[in-house]
Image 1 (cartoon, one colour):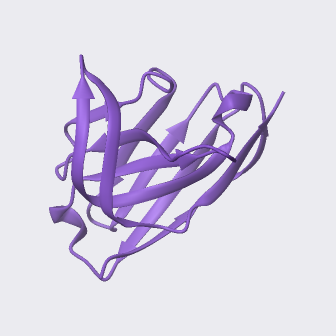
Image 2 (cartoon, helix red, strand yellow):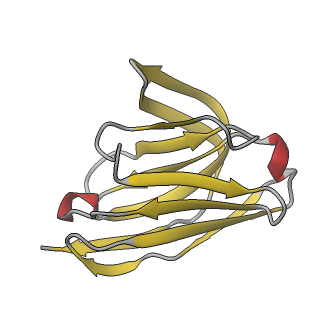
Length: 128
């Protein structure tokens, strides 16, 4: 059973930056593709970014492309999400996911992703 623990969320003004981290235990991190999703109040969870197990390939949702960067450090079993130029519409609980059962890329953009394991999430609030 993979265990994922996110951190790094908080309150930030529009235009600011945050870096989220996700530490993975009870699993073999380097063998998993990984990703981030987010869920705003009253909305379904939205796929944000995915990254291959070797860290070379990444895909992003159109809504975050050019502003967010996903990365990983396999030596310390940690996944990151650097978020720049934050907007109020980025406000959500951000979850990391391990070992996607599927994800969908259309014209280079991530449109959906589902993972076998999700963390509890970290709240990101962007004020206008």
